[in-house]
Image (cartoon, rainbow, N blue to C red; front, top):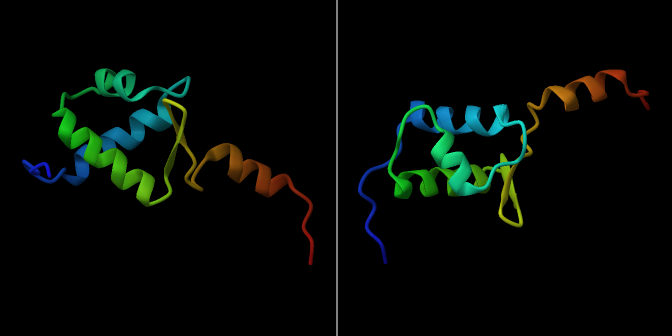
Length: 86
């Protein structure tokens, strides 16, 4: 069993979320980790990804990370333009 060095802070979690949302293509773990504006330990990064997956904000498609949270602007636009059923 691995020892957790420290828990990620909220600003670090939000930074990773923003990086996933802003990515042009679905990044791999390594690509995302290297693209972060502020460097973090890989162990902390993996812990954040586990949290995001457990909270249903991301899914893994093979080796790629896909943002699936309901705050997607394309989803909001689609719901606004869709036909309403009673």
